Structure formats: C-alpha cells, structure tokens
Length: 247
Image 1: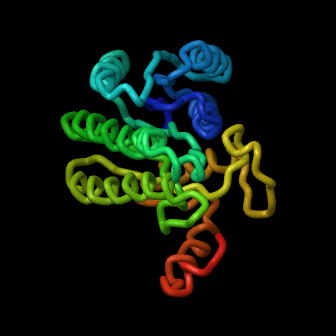
Image 2: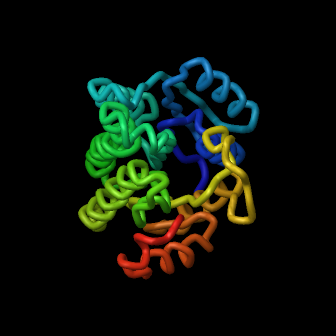
Image 3: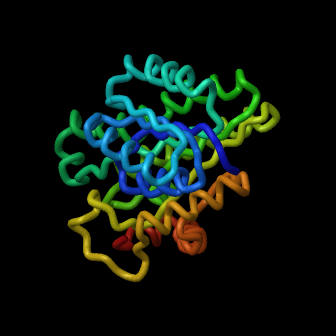
C-alpha cells in the first residue's frame, strides 16, 4: 500500500504515533483525531517533515458520544473518502478503584469499550457505502480472558473484539476489511509504572506489526505474534484451575 488516505483516532497514543510515522514515511495522507488538540497538531507537523503528503488534525474527546458523528463526517469529507481508519485510543484503569467506584468503572468501560464500538459503527457505515477500505482497531490480549488484576479493562476489550468479529463477518463481502489488533505488554507512558521484562514490546515494534497485518489484510493480529501462543494456553486453562491462579 502507498498513497493511502488514513484516519487515526487517538492519534497521540504511543502506538498510534509510531504507526503514523510509518504511514508518513511512505507518503500517505493522514487525518488525526485526539483529545489533546495541541499535541495532535505538533504530531501533524512532525509527520509532514517525515513525508506525509497532507496531515489534518482535529479535536475529539471519545467520551463525548454526541461529537462522534460530526468528527467522522468531517474526516471523510476532508480526505474525500478513506482507505484506512485506525482506532487507537484507550486508558488503563485502576482495577482496585473500579472495584470500589462504579461511576469510575463505567466511565473507563465507556472509553475503552463503548466509544470504540460507537466509532467503529460510524466508520463501518462510511466504508461500506464507498465499497472499500479497512477498519483497524487496537483491542488487547486482555480481552481474551478476565484476570483479577485488570478485568474491567479486559471486559471492555472483550466487548470490542467480539463486536469486531461480527462486524468483520458482516462486511466480508462488502469490500471492507476489519482488523482486530491485540497487543500484549507495550512500553508506553500509560504503562510507565510497571516493571518491564522479556515479554514487553516497544510501540515501534507493535507499529511495524500493525503495518504488516494491514498489508496482508489480516483479520486478527496478536502483537508481538508470540502472544497468540500465550493466550491460547491461558484460554485453555480450566476455570476451576484458573480461578486459583495469580496472573
């Protein structure tokens, strides 16, 4: 792929920025949406230097569902259609706080789950209408099985992954590819407080994996790929055993 028109939602995230740099290097046109408009603008200027043909940036708070339709409409209009839409926003909620504060838990679920589903729905309608394109969404390996340490986040990502599975099946004959991206541990500002180890990947490595998956029109991409094996083993553990494990 080259010379593509690409929308990135959550463009200020580490993975999104790393992926955008790869798009820019091959001369793609980009439209960035992020809550931090100033940061998105700064990234846009950098991407122009790196080779992007054009870069637009605009503000979108994904928690403001009333703003979704207008933001997506503007993106499609500004780019005269899209070839790829990448949804990459997210937070990492504190599970202990989720356990005690239901309002906080539901807000975090909305950001990591419901908002992604809502945006995917709007973008899918647009791509289906034009008869081609790709919707790529960053979910997580955390959605493959609930773990005590992050099950609110995992539940949101499970909802996203299941939604995308059905959407992919629906759009299979409509010329639209739906890619579910499932990173494992990634060393980003969001995970700065965690001790890093051999299983951790850089945003740049994940970005390269995203590009490969897009170019190959994959359906699901575990990144790095060894996470497919790890999660297959975790999913296979019987529940009566799993509930006693510390993961």
